Length: 174
Ligand SMILES: Cc1cc2nc3c(=O)[nH]c(=O)nc-3n(C[C@H](O)[C@H](O)[C@H](O)COP(=O)(O)O)c2cc1C
Image (cartoon, rainbow, N blue to C red; front, side, top):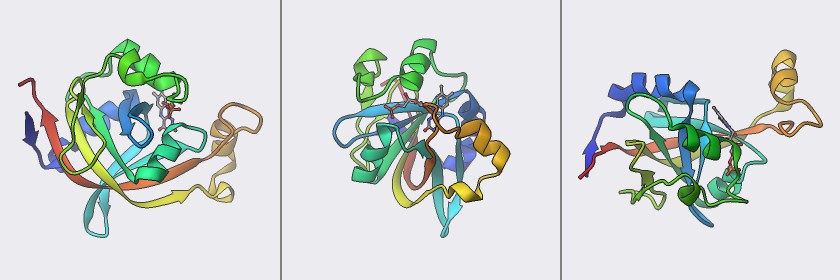
């Protein structure tokens, strides 16, 4: 079952869960999920939005580019299970089916094709409203050195995807 919510009533829960990791789910070639630690709940063009930042090397990126939609799954309180955090925060959908590896139960969405996750019930369904690649020259040098160092695995930049929240709810047990 799904209990519809006003997403802004859950801003505190989302913002507190985010730095510890929440899940960004995509579909397209297959279901995939990855841990994110950066994002914003907000408003753009008078619409409720959730913005995510996806490094260009992630398997998640072509999925988003193809479907232009995603779901966000977060715990209502507490944080992700350790194994879920490890698998979804370090392994790529190119190599593993994270749904199986992390033992996640998918729940069909109402408005889009990308499911939510029963174990992380605070769910936002989002359609991409706008996306933008980071402009490297606009990033402060200190931040570039820290997050985008050439020649490392994490040398590539992020794309921001601003998703219009088209449905928000809490998945309950029955
Ligand atoms: C706490 C935490 C936060 C993360 N935040 C982000 C993020 O905001 N954006 C991003 O691109 N990767 C982030 N990552 C890294 C991805 O979760 C990780 O590279 C993942 O394996 C990518 O999966 P994919 O290749 O299936 O898309 C984070 C990882 C952790 C552990």
